Length: 79
Length: 267
Ligand SMILES: Cc1ncc(C[n+]2csc(CCOP(=O)(O)OP(=O)(O)O)c2C)c(N)n1
Ligand code: SF4
Ligand code: SF4
Ligand code: SF4
Ligand SMILES: [Mg+2]
Image 1 (cartoon, each protein chain N blue to C red):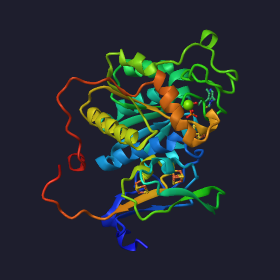
Image 2 (image 1 turned 135 degrees about the vertical axis):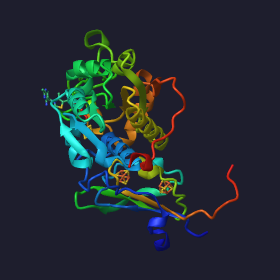
Image 3 (image 1 turned 30 degrees about the vertical axis):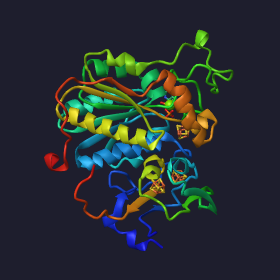
């Protein structure tokens, strides 16, 4: 399945709080084994199933996450 | 790998909006102040009112809000943000004015200024960040600390017989005629953040219509003061704080349904 959405995590802003991990409905975010310059262990995306729901970005207290989602093809109607 | 997605057309959540400065927040990992700052600044960005907004920062962990919020800001003495906001709004009534205050700032040392500004119906937005503790000074008991909650000044837990109950200041000020819109929201889940954002949008719309004081309590966390992991604070908010501070509207105007301000209307 082609990738539909993804996140870009600014790992220098991440403080490893894991609130995004909790908020992700596809459980695609995890603490990695990398540390940033401040010494925080940072989160990374480990899935190709990101839906671009922006949940992680909404709860990230450090504005570390940007979300990109494929533009939907124009549908005739939405429910 | 997903390079084709990384373009402005596909950007659905931008974490570098111009109403937030590029200075990284100094807050502890998982601190709700960061989320509250972001959502407030996102609304100001979306309404296109960056140039027309003046904020008042408190004393507390968010004392440096003026480093992060890229709008005109004024620092107030501890607890006096509503009084300072009153002065700014009266001199510059066409500006959008908000105060951003913690529970120690707004509900302890600043109770008098808060109550009287709202009683006068000052046409401002008060953002009240309730994390049930004095975060900045090392986790002392606040008026809003939960019964039984351990803090550095209630090491055996808050005993309501000797220390009183958490102060429901939001319900109290809702009784005042000057309070136009009073709501309690939170920042602990994505859904809660979305709802909070709508409440802030409404509040700026009401301020534009000169309706009086809008007061938004934000139930937040303090992982360091509460001595919990950020993840554990989420269930503490849901299971403990919401018992005393349930989220939802407390006073809503019975006026006609709202039309949201658009950037074009503003410019
Ligand atoms: C006049 C005065 N009294 C006391 C203090 C010490 N002080 C600084 S911040 C604070 C309380 C902060 O708590 P809160 O408003 O809840 O903010 P938080 O850090 O929890 O966000 C106190 C008592 C002060 N700075 N000035
Ligand atoms: S956008 Fe949604 S699905 Fe994608 S990583 Fe964030 S929370 Fe998970
Ligand atoms: S919510 Fe933000 S700061 Fe916290 S772990 Fe996720 S990306 Fe890092
Ligand atoms: S002490 Fe508490 S309120 Fe202050 S930055 Fe740390 S977590 Fe946030
Ligand atoms: Mg506090």
